[in-house]
Image (cartoon, rainbow, N blue to C red; front, side, top):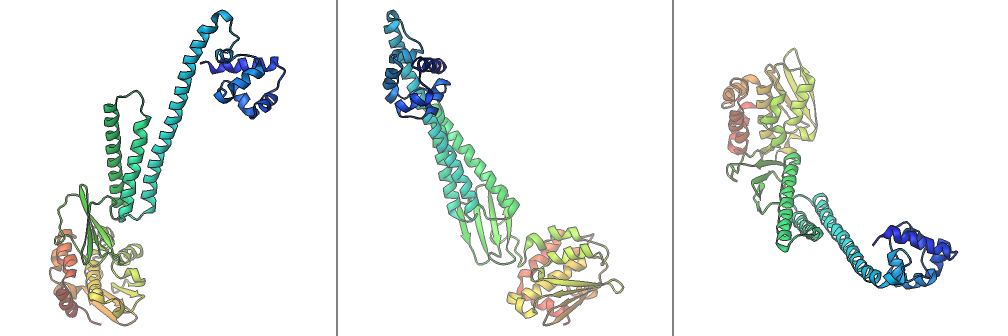
Length: 383
């Protein structure tokens, strides 16, 4: 069915009846834009007004669908052809309408996935549930868009679409976990302990340690080499205070204000605010924290922090000889000589630069031993 030809024929017949587009539209009870659309070949009159249109234009429906006035000898042949063309045209329009509906359904599913990833917290099960529902809706729309395929091929393509989509969701979730240090959405098991939450996701585990504290941090175990008993645990934010991060601030000389500031800023207690001073002549470092010492000493956090900070600073700044930690309550002073003599295995930590494994073994892991912390703190610090 040639829409452009039919449109030109309507325009010709309208003009023969001395009608404008507006006048024809008024007689049919429609807008003139609809008439303009027909005459431009961008659509056809609805079946409900086709007979009335033909009466006004003084033509037959057969003439209209043929796009010309038909000779009586060809009338029957043209009629049969137009009936077939009309059926094909109607089926095509229905198919196009259905395709549009299923495309909308597919994108509604994708939109639901987007909403699930942006609205719900990562550790909420609703995020993963709504993502899967969105993927199923999108898969349903995709399968129904496909034309010219057998049922078996449609099922195969639908399963493939869903699996590829699910894999992409897992990869997107994993990227978010790695980049933003958050819990995975697609964890199939969540185990809650006293100090941590373990999320077991496909292909990796995530350990959320010091949960709901200022020093919360995540360890992403892609090799699944850790258990709850073997995972590295520290009372501090390991992403900031761990040796893998603070080793970048290793320096030979105290007095590099930018380097010293970055180091102190990544060590424990910095979260309460501080200022620091450097005595380059006597190689001394003074840090004034904006907090009272007893206020931060729950579970020996003060002692652990001062031990950790002292060993870290002496290990990473080669020539600093004394550190003074000032609080609104007390002052704590420690020297390199005291650390060397009284902190066990200090030389193993700094042997040939910084030995990361020994740092974790003899400093980080020791901060979990309250008896070690109390005994060592009493030996080293003078307040």
